Length: 104
Image (cartoon, rainbow, N blue to C red; front, side):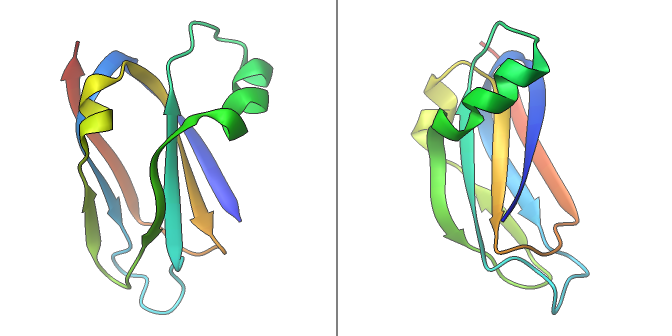
């Protein structure tokens, strides 16, 4: 599978996440998961090595072709988060990944 780690604004509460597969009608991932954490370290090796153990915001979300998928849950709003990892299975195209939130 493919994955990507994003460093968000320090300590935001996330209102929603958008995962878009627009323009991918045949080569889109079948599902994805989101993991998140708050890390004070800026060491990229530590961030990468710990990312498999981060808390799941979402596990096994089914994705569709050429669509914007919106994710909202209470865990995202309550937790202090500054890193998010998106995992896509098996692989494929995502045209946009957006995070909406505010400082806690």
